[in-house]
Image 1 (cartoon, one colour):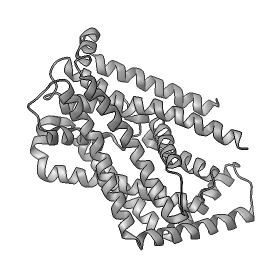
Image 2: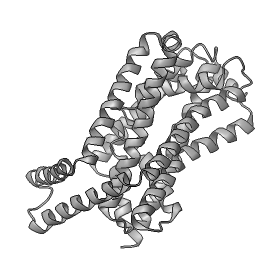
Image 3: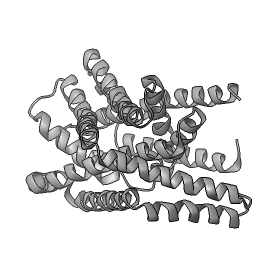
Image 4: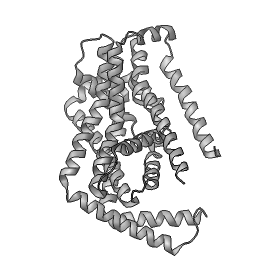
Length: 338
């Protein structure tokens, strides 16, 4: 493991330790564990399956779009890319490591870099777009209730919504502007050459220009097939809702009543919107703080940290473990095929 990876791992562990402190601060651990045990096993399994669907849905979208560009593609491989992306996004600030690693493994398994780039960019844009639209809708129809739940943390929600919206605009501009994309690719190569990471090569520049042209052709293809974009939009909306619905499963599984499924999902969506773009690996620590602020009036006493452990444990740490195993499988598969 190189020095950079060691620093990243150490930072991740520091954040994990801080997160545990945030969760159990002011609570008796035995009481919290006892509260977690009130969850019905049926609802626990349902919540775990919902979490797996959340990550697998991205793989279905990759499979659908990649198949449109390159023909038949194995669904299992695309779901595998999705879990790889989740793992590296979870351990890097602002989830910056996910797509590069997905692109790496897709290229290693014979997919064109241009097609893979367009597919991953499309999935990312739609993913952020759906979250931003949800955030705007919540402000329009649920603003007063949200302010009552979040209190002073409402400003973190505004920041998260602004950052998500800004990123969507930037990504859309890069996608539809071939000149911008080509400039980014060639500019990136120039920076890497200045840093002596890459050597000067006329052939590489020609290949990068060719890739940029192929990228634009793939974008034009997708824009010309709006039904495919519509499918990804609908599936992304379902995917987003699934992880919010999972919190309601935890709520019901603990035998609680009084809050509607829509209220629970909106509160969980507000947590995601607030922390999604913050530069912390897996948004550790801040997610737990936002959860406590959002659900403090929903889960009482020890049920609040207990529900937080269950929800966060399933929608992040459980998926991170599954994704880590998948990433290891991909790593050794690539090495054995050399």
